[in-house]
Length: 50
Image (cartoon, rainbow, N blue to C red; front, side, top):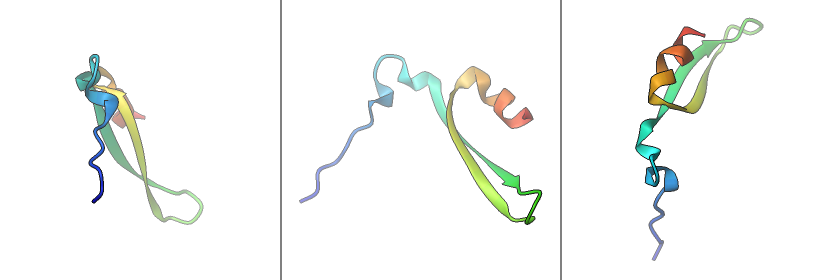
């Protein structure tokens, strides 16, 4: 049986973080790629403004 892993992000204020995913278009090929980051909730707006 496989063990279930529990993320350590939920400990010690980890609930203030969120995972954000943004689609970015490459200027060279025109293909789309996804950029993923884990940021604090107050910096989510700044991530999408970049």
